[in-house]
Length: 294
Image (cartoon, rainbow, N blue to C red; front, side, top):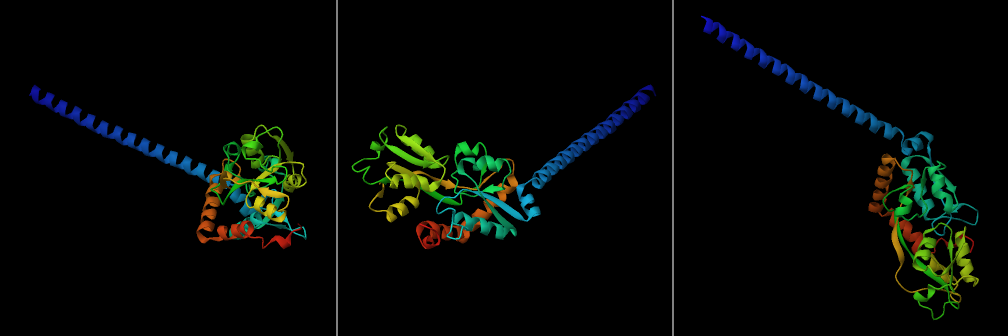
């Protein structure tokens, strides 16, 4: 009899332990599920918060996209009536049309255009801005919507008989737009040369044309066009293009929704051929030249 009672006590104790273990396991699983649900909820909340703070939502609410740009032929310029025309204007208007909103262009000096974006003066920069590591520290870039490279436009008489290596001399003067990529590339490739900086795009070529500078640098097809208009005075230095790279929209950091939307829009315009067609019109022809003052 004693041995039987002891056996029953042992069985009861083991059963109780099994029940307790199952309860503990259930509680543990419940805690894991609850934690997972809480984590998912927090992630969803964070995602919704980021989405609601996107500039895309601001554009939709205001019914207008504000685009910062700097005047730079043929990217953006004023026609004879003072209206803005150019490749960037076509891109901006098409983008606004596809978003179902109005567009407001905000002409801004090139050397202050990134600070103006960061300050919230406009929603995005669409102004032929090359993607560089230095700029990327301050702003985010989309995928490229255009590609270009830089060529040297020189005064034919002042650079007669000179090679590309000869331009890297204290006796040689370059002209460039302040804050633009050509100014940076000239300083890197021709550090010994004197560099004159100007706020206006056309001033650099004018200095070369007037004989006040040996050369300038700008994205093609501008050098070819200027040399074609002034064949007696200007020439494009032969050689490979400098700093070939893509140009992207620039926007404020911390906005993945805007990057996603703009990238998808750019990809669609590449696939449809619209970007290539517009780029060829403005950069490979002068069908638009009679709209602007020479």
